[in-house]
Structures are given as structure tokens and as C-alpha cells.
Length: 102
Image: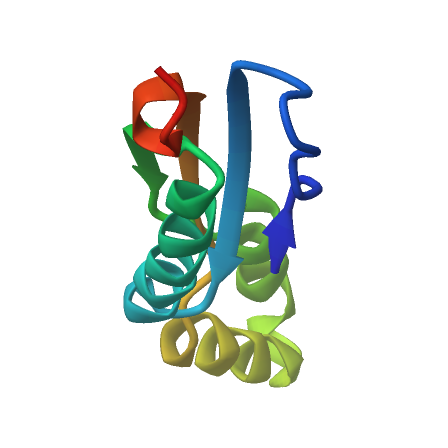
């Protein structure tokens, strides 16, 4: 999942884009694809921030409460077997020199 629209030519000096996915490698791959395309438009990545996904406490509490009737075990298996989605946020800044104008 990629959030943010593609910047229009000369629309803003700062562009922020978010990348979400199950695996860190998927996020980095999407970031690299966009970084190459945005560099051609004059945008350079200036900062990155990654937040690891985590399960909410409500899921753990629900699983705990439902464990005596065995439904909770299914929830525990789901919680332990899958990783929640992480989020990578990248800030791009427009650099006129990188775009060839200067």
C-alpha cells in the first residue's frame, strides 16, 4: 500500500510518501522504485522513518477471554503467525540542481 499522490511538476518543494506492507523488503523495494522516478523529476529523499507494526492490546485481550471456549486459540495462532503491517514514511525535497535547472 502506497499513500500519497504523485507530485505535479513544480507543485511543491516537499513531498511526503508513505509505504505500507507486510515485509520490510517490500517497503524498501517500493521506495527504491519511487526514488528513481522522483529523482528524474528533481526530488531527492531527505529522510525516512520506519515504524514496525504491532498488534493492538484488544486482540490479545479478546484471545485471552475466548481461550476457554477454544475460539481464543484460533486468535492466538493468528497473532503469533502473522506480523502486522509496518509503515515507512519518506520525505522528498525538490532540488532544482538535481533536476537540471540551475
